Amino acid sequence: MKDAVHLLTYDIGTTGAKTCLFRLGKTLELMDTEVVGYPLITTADGGSEQRVDDWWKAICQGSHTVLSRKNCPKEKIAAISFCCQMQALVLVDREGEAVRNPMGYMDGRATKVFYENFACGFPKIEGMNAVRLLKSLYITGGAAATAKDPLWKYAWVRENEPENFARTYKWLDVRDYLALRCTGNFVMTRDSAHLTFIYNTRPGREGWSKTLCKCFNVNPDHLPGVQAATDRSGELTARAAKELGLTAGTPVFGGGGDISLIPIG
Image (cartoon, rainbow, N blue to C red; front, side):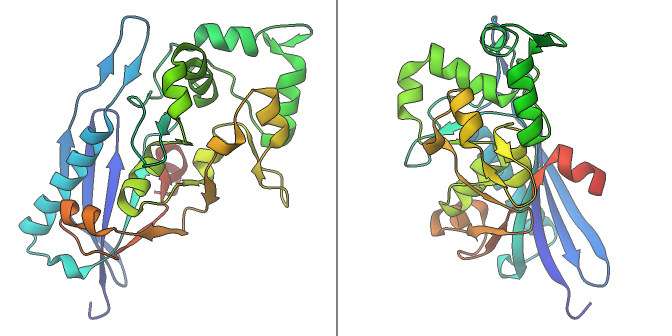
């Protein structure tokens, strides 16, 4: 495999992160893998959270382990990418610091907010406000139809934690946060954007919907740029490279969420 390249990928799950070292030539070969666990924080009111530093420490440890175990020099790593849990809410400030612990996909604290904003009024379809539901379906092809969708977590923070909400610069998902920590760039992959259900998915009209932002009281300034899974998010900063045991400038590609990538796999 004279022309083979080495890749590192990170699968960030609910209770652990898997780091995988691949060799890509005529075929794709999994050379090694390492799983590092971390806690899931639950609260009495239905919350389910994680710590961004736990994610980061897990992929740093995983990177060092697989490179060392396979005696793979960091200079051989041609690129890194991600496959992560989805529908979390990661709010960050202008410096890229999380303003609170991410609310995971199992977080159910936004039930009251959901009913007040989407399961209200008349007429209704399947218990949801017909006008808002049809508008969401037409623009996005889907709808934030459960209290666990990120849209309602965002609304919950706005209503229950105004100080954290005031500090918010961008709304991200798990993959997007880790790419930010790697590159310093605020960007979201298209699959993450789609599952906010405020992203216009109609051909030729793709982008954040001003109509839905207004409908659901979302600040458009909180929404990052959107990229494809195959686009480059940026390059590893010197700080991120040192912590991961890699080379500064290594390309970081979008990847995506587990819901999107599992069927491809």
